[in-house]
Length: 268
Image (tube, rainbow, N blue to C red; front, side, top):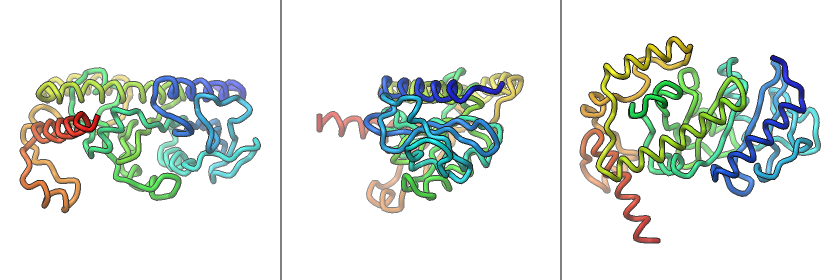
């Protein structure tokens, strides 16, 4: 369905208010875009608070990121949006934000990969962690590129999160789901560990995903059996040398998260 320019801009403004109101962004953080044709993208402007945008401030640009109409410049991270649109023509909207709990996992270097909640397995599958790239430069796009084909949500190391969808509200609700999952995962870690679903359970959910036409190769997330047998990799050689041997599987995730939580509480 073809939407009017005003409707698209109004939806962008609404989603900007939602991510600001929910604390997913502060100040001028984050960016939102909608692709309305092969060579036209509506995007949030650079340097403005997403919770205070007006329709006339939304920028129309082409697939090279050049402004077509409006008086403001598009987000400095428009290149990441354009890469996502080029890689997957089915993507029609992108939301980038810094939801605190999910971003905490990204800063800790922990992807949200366990198969824990049926709703998350069905709607998002695995949420990978893309390596760090400097915001506002081409560096931010390359680490995400390898995940684009089979994922709709990504953690960006030391940065935030990005979600995509066939329309803007779909992309936005995926951001809500991602942050909600991160909050639950953090509490589970603090209480003793994540109880992942079994491979058989995930197979049943995958059949639902298939019926819904959703993306994701098997296995789309880490099952109980996979977590039990996993040997985690250190985030860097220096970290491995400094911290010594790591426990395996889910215990490593618990140790990493709880350690950071305790350190934060000491500083509070």
